[in-house]
Length: 505
Image (tube, rainbow, N blue to C red; front, top):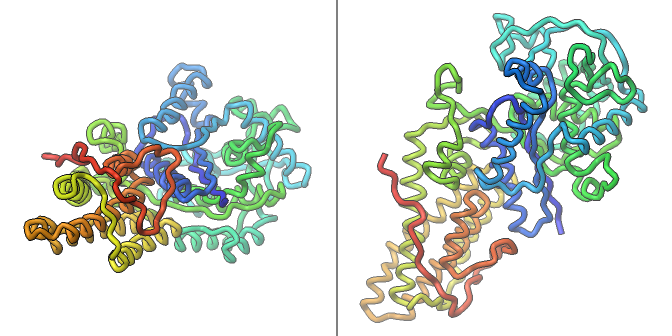
């Protein structure tokens, strides 16, 4: 049995979840569900980052205890499992004892290797990035390009990690695809960054400046810097550093880290150096997505155009939001969230295409066959055509191109609708050709079964509703039988409510 381990980045808990993180966590969920359906032993981890200056300052401004403030927002992110219908196996919090223990173990390994040393540093510090920013990386106004704010100048005595020592090894691993960075443009970007020189990175902050963090094991006057702390969650979430490291031994190395393009340097650079230092195998892949804009503009509270995913879930259902984000936002590039486009896609692809196909096929099966499946012995040619769509879908998922995967699913739905219009089962029925009607409807029912499995990773509730109408149950143990002929003779088909009633707005 193959193993598949997928993670998201862990967001800061100083603000509620936004549509950009919804995109990322749904991408990870789609991959997890896809691999479970194929019988792979799968583990899906997400969580939250609760340490650092940003959270500490925000809690002070709110006149709240830092941990209490973190608890409030951590719960909002944890609740996404229900809100977005996620299948994550665990949720890691960086303030938990298990995480602190694992982070200290990793620090100690790196320290004993001689890769962590104490030194003074003066530089531009961006609170938003929780990172020191080089002069060359600031924009023409001297602002951080991501947060559009001027960094503060800090001079401190910190511990540093010898990232420069591992630059060549990191570069080689990426060039040889020992650790894949997807898409190619991000692979080239990180290689160019390494080429320009990876400097050693600050790995701690003085406790008198930042009392909120994990204590450095060898020096109680310092706390771990946010990236050293946060990045470690990918292994502490598997029990690294605990009394039982079974999950870590079983699932590491990670199959895919899903991250945003703004934190590429940390995940394909700093994190990889840390693992090399500690003698831990490297990730198999880092999948990088872009940003989500709103109606063509960057999201901003001041512009009032921030998209709240919870609003769309409440009003239109979770599956339609999941579908739109996976189908309309390019998987590895920037994309726009437009309400008008959301409604268009809902009506054209979900209501008119997918919903209509399911409705037509099930209704005709009830009308002409009494709701009973009649196996078609002459299905080879039709089945082979359907298999082509499945193959293209699977290839796209394996390449982390969920948009293309779903386009192939919709092509298959279109193929089914065109087949109905071409064969006209109602006309054949009037001619009394009962076996021909049964054969046509079996092809369509089998196509629906295949479509349901292609839908399941992205729209779990919808996929289950389709399969329910085809007589399936016990969805937890469901596996994708992609070979033609999964529906059995005499199985009962039953019409349920419409999957996607059209939207009027």
